[in-house]
Image (cartoon, rainbow, N blue to C red; front, side, top):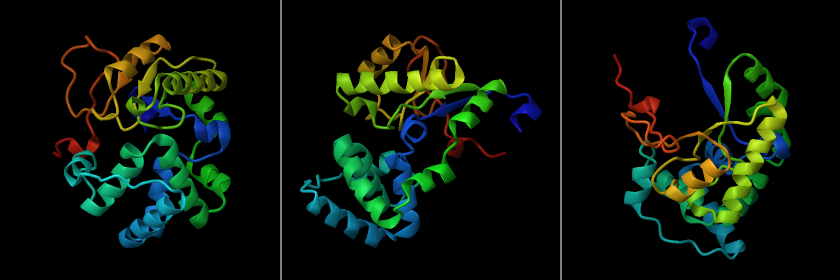
Length: 224
């Protein structure tokens, strides 16, 4: 389709599924929600948190719904807790345990859902730019400096190995004000990226901050 209409494109790729055949927590949550209704998911989450001795922090419904505008309150609270409130290592541990109980064949899930390294390279050869979407898809503002630098460098090195070109464009995981900050933008620049896309719903009227560009969600575009 893009070739037919002559539209340029950047495809943003996360590293972990390619390097480790491990799914990202954000996609594991989607898969779990397909199999569990809201009440069952919440109950299983409580049990898993208790078993892992992880305290369940309070989650503001207002904050959760502001971030997940297209979800109901119960779903928004759970997703906000797992993706934004818990420490990344705790969120991953909880989601991994739930996922393993429901979908033991994680490698098979990865093979079905994600592109392979060969497919990414083929896409790049077809004149589509390949950008980075982080290595582990964690909110960058929640990572300490060492973890942040390690994530940015790992995905850049991986994509360079696959495509022969170091990525210059980056799309922030989640991309909201809670998950993107000036520190992340500075580290992005220091790692060699030239442009970064947040999920701020706005038009870019200036290019003065190329590492903090806004973009429109397709759900927010006017329908003719």
